Every structure is written in structure tokens, then in C-alpha cells.
Length: 334
Image (cartoon, rainbow, N blue to C red; front, side, top):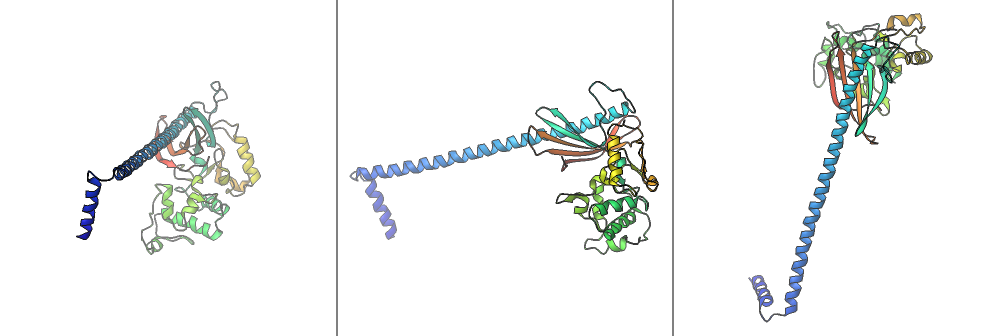
């Protein structure tokens, strides 16, 4: 009550006609300053909000432009595949045009407001895990060992892949069947069938994300395996160096010679490289497949960050194509 009386007396004093004019001016000044402060805070808040929205819109626009550039790169890659088929074994080309190689060579194309980089990879140069056998499994085992996996772990992975896709329940020496998978914290059964995606390998005993995708400056095996070539042999015309070095009997010198000679080779020519007798059952030196992976990265001007897309297409005999895999965005190596 006393507090209420004090407030009342204070208000009566400042509002009374006889109150000091300076007191009134001081209070009015304080009120004006508070109003100005509040208005400044509101204006500043709107300014920050508008700037943030502007930056967000600009960033979204640039990301969208890079996405469209990457998608344009995929379409260009498909067009180049048809161009390859049109000029098979040709020595004469349109002026200023050469057939793009399908061995992972990067091609850059300017397209306002930036550019895209495209790689075409013939799937026949990779290890097909759907057609993997005890014989072709030797290449996969060597690939794993070369990437830093212990020999026993590499044997376990190869045997487990073979067990995962075979129709029986017989466990290989280092493999795994239902008894292992059903004992896991989240149990499941071996598929006993073909792989539908490469990511499915993460369900197989011994395979970790680090082995599949890589990390810490180390490559994973994802770039060197496939489910689309339908072949048990490796095509020397398109195989990456890592796969070549995994072929029994191949030395770094042989791998370098193969890569050097195929640079000036037509799309389906014969490589004519002398290879060890022990290696012949694992490789072929001619032809190409109808399955290709296209990796495209879109860049905006001098921006180092890219938007990347990975697609796998099948080219049929009627010169039509279909996507069998499409992922956007992905991480690709420049």
C-alpha cells in the first residue's frame, strides 16, 4: 500500500501544472531515447534478416545452378556414348571432335554460368561381384590387400560375398551364412541371390563403410567393383590402374604400358599388349560393354565446391538407354 502511495505521489508531482518544467523535459527525452532505441533494434533486426535471406537465396541459386550443370554433364556423357557407337573403330572424325574415352578420363565443358566435368567409366573394366567366382575372386582379394586390408580379412570378405549370393547354406572356409547373420544384434539372413546395389555390400561380413567408400585420403573399393558388367573377366581397355595391379601376374610396368597404349586407341580396338600367360584367364583385350557409369560435377565460375551426380546407364541394341542407377548429390574426386 505504501509503495502504491509513493508511485501515486510521484505521478502527481510530474503531472502537476506547477511541476518543474525541466523534470518534464528530462522524462520526455528519456522516453524519446527509448523509442528511438527500440526502433533502431527493430530496423537492425529487419536488416540482418533481409541480408540473411538474401545470402540464403543467393547460395540456393548457385547450388541449383551447379546442380543443373552437373545434370547437363550427365546428358552430355550419354550423348558421347552414342557418338562412340556411331564412330566405332573409325579413324576419321568430325572436325574438332574425338571420341571420349570410357576409362575415367575427365573432360571439362564450359557452359554459362560455369562449367561441368564429366567422367565416363566402362563397367566392364571393374570387378563384377554378381558374377564373382572362386577364380575372379582372386582379383578382388588382391585389390583388397593392395588397399591395405590384411590377407585374412581380404579372404574373409571374398568368401563372405560368395556365400551371400550363392543359393546354398554351405559356409566357405572364411565365409558366413545365416548362422552368423542371425547371431547379430539386429539379425537378418543371407540373401542367397544377386546384389541389387553396391551399398548392399555393407550387409556382408567383414565389409565396413571405410572399406567400401574409403576415407582419410584412402580410396575405397566402390570405384573398382560393379554389378552391371555380367562378366568374370576384366576389360583392359577401361580398367583402372588399381584393378590392373590386382590381376595376377601384372606388374606396375605392365599396368602403365596398358594405360599408355590405350590412350590413342579407337573405342573397340585391340590393345595388343603382351601379358603373362597366367593372366590371360582373368582379362580381355578388346570390346566394350553396354553399361557405363557417368560421374558429372558442376562448378560455378572459380568455385572449388561442386555439385556432383553419378548415374549408370545401359545402352541397348536399339540405341536406346535406361538409367539403372542415379544418385544426386554424391561425392566425387576431381
